[in-house]
Length: 186
Image 1 (cartoon, rainbow, N blue to C red):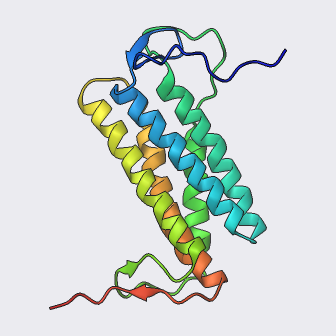
Image 2 (cartoon, rainbow, N blue to C red):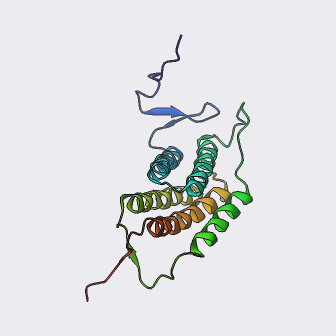
Image 3 (tube, rainbow, N blue to C red):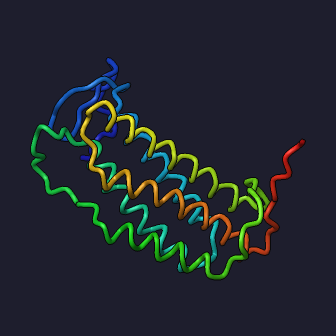
C-alpha cells in the first residue's frame, strides 16, 4: 500500500519539527526552512535551464547542501533526532568560493550595477539569489531572537547568494547575453 502524502495533522495550522515538537506553521523556524525549500526549487529550475554540465553538477551539490540546511532548520535543537542528520562543513563554503573565483576569472570586470535580465536563465538565477538572501535574513532573524541556528548555515547562505550573482553573470557570458547596466535617472 502506498504511503499517503496528506496526514491532515497540519489542518489546524501546526506542524512538527524533527524531534516531535509542535509549532505554529508561522513559526520563524518554519519560515526559514520553507524559504530554503523555495530556494532549492529555484536552483533546480536554474539547473534545468543550463546546458553547461559543470554548472549543473555544482548546482546539484548546492541542492544537496540546501537539504542539509533544511534538515538542520527543521530540527528541534532541544531534542536529539532519532535519525542521523547530515552536517554542513566549512569545505562546502570553500567550494562556493572556488567556483566564484573560477567564474570571475573569465568574466569582464563590472563597471556598473547590473539589472537582472537578458535571458530567462540569467533572470531565474537572480530570482534564486533574491530568495537566498531572504533565507539568510530569516536565519539571521532567528539568531537575533535567540532561536538556535548553526552559524555555518548563515555563512553558507551568504556565500551562496554571492555565488548565484556571479553564476548569473557567467550564464550570460556562456549564452552571449548582454549584461544590462543600470543607468540611474538623475
